Length: 335
Image (cartoon, rainbow, N blue to C red; front, side, top):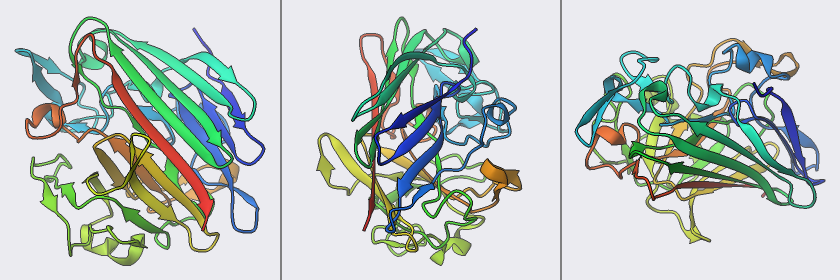
């Protein structure tokens, strides 16, 4: 049995600590306008709390299918598949033991100007109820001084299967210990969301958001209208209006006004779950920091939630002979 460990990527300007347990990002150190480094992700100092299930998906890659699958059921090629109902009444983030709770193999770890690490994992036929064997890789690379890239791939070996991975890092650009992101500004390159029912499953509708509290097409404070959306944001945005570069489209821009730290996120995924840590409560993290409600923002690019049961959503089914590709580019700056 491989051992869970921490690995470092460091290019002299930014530093990232990741684990082969769940491909988890535990720290990201980036400079603010004063040049001072801050760790801008929620997490723990050691691997043990992650293994004990104390992290509400801090920093990990979730799969085989991210987000919710309604009633933990889907039918593919005439066969009904039943998944663990780990977030009643639905299946969430791959089930009881999703990809965030397995030890990935370290395939390669490169140092230098563009340090990188590649993790791989073979998911078995029937694992957590999903069909077919699938080989996965996830590579984190520091592509420039203040840019990190994540490339996720999945290759089904023998059966068609839904695949939709998501990177679940909780960002707080003021520093992980700074308690709230309600003062952060965000721009989300989406004119629509997929509204949800009372169990947070999309209804199938694609809803225009102009003039609603969900509208972040122009940069605005996360906290400005959050009280109008219940306990906070936890919604899939349809990424339909971002400019493109190198095959990726602009998904979001998150900024902490105090430090000027800015994160521009680019992706090739069709959707992004914007989640404001609504259910985080009394978690004791790195250095004894207290993490509570709204202490971070998650920008989880993904296939649409429950797409396997919604024919009008972009398909997440990948067949043998095809490859699942999902890339994310995290550009940090101080603007």
